[in-house]
Length: 177
Image (cartoon, rainbow, N blue to C red; front, side, top):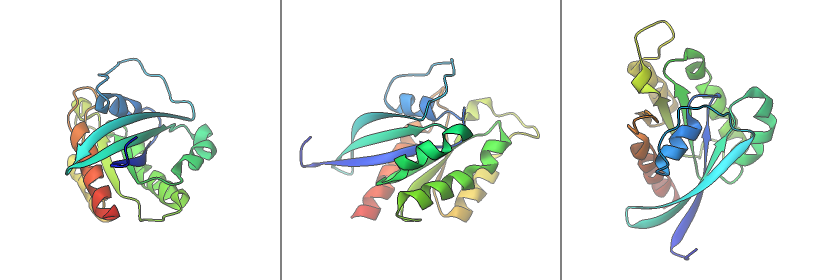
């Protein structure tokens, strides 16, 4: 790796089956798979990009969202540059757990709230009005109260995925400059 390339370790967190792996794969240009396989512990990938004329190598850690892996994934928070917190707009409980994931990440990163984060409302292509559905306004209000950016995504269509990583990258650049 060239000295001109910045290596940034980031984590994707959220409850199981919210689409973290699908978002990662979509961002890497690997398309979308309809079959669901839960992540066991953690999985990672590297991705090179350029932001504001800066060469970035993302080290993207996709962390399992199932409660049984909670103690295992905490170790992956150390030395992160940023995080992506994901919830599923069709499952309100995943939205209700956002602050738990966020606080866990901040606490275990060793950097407290000094970790840039983006909140993603995923599966917007499946949103229908109903008791379980989380509205755009609810997501925006939560993100605003937490002081973090909010983006709606669909890993299936690709909507918002590139924008999410661009936003996180720009925030990390500002923080590290």
